[in-house]
Image 1 (cartoon, rainbow, N blue to C red):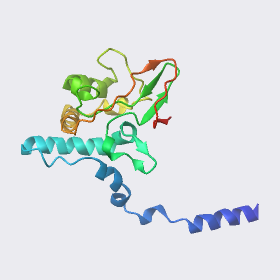
Image 2: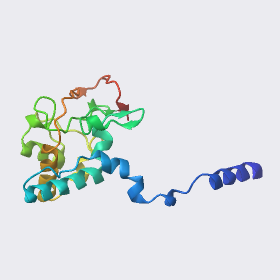
Image 3: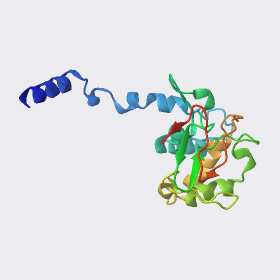
Image 4: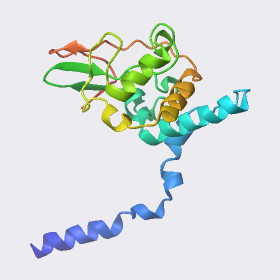
Length: 181
């Protein structure tokens, strides 16, 4: 027991402490992944989109809605969906494409439909995604301004044509590259 304790303490001594890296440096990859909104001409809309960018970054949307490759997140598919697959007793869900692509992303949805999913997890076809699959209960108390800011930011992203499967009730689906939770 003494030898095991000594070995464990030695191991802890040689790993670098987490506090030697500043939070800014630690989160730099995630911050760099989110495209800037500097190309928006209207300063008011740019400020709203910047707020939306901040909310999207700090809530970790990229963690589920982007594909992760062997070298980390695939920034060419930023918020393109398909990065995570979650199976519940009721259905199998794959993270959706949040870019404004008109065929595979939010370009086919109205602003109100997007806000309804963020508020209540209710999609346009009426199905409700569980709060354990998408953390909409955490988003449900966002202000209307925050919801609008997120939608404005998502509408200004580069459209990415990336098909993700629709939810499948009660049976598994396979999607290459998706992380299973």
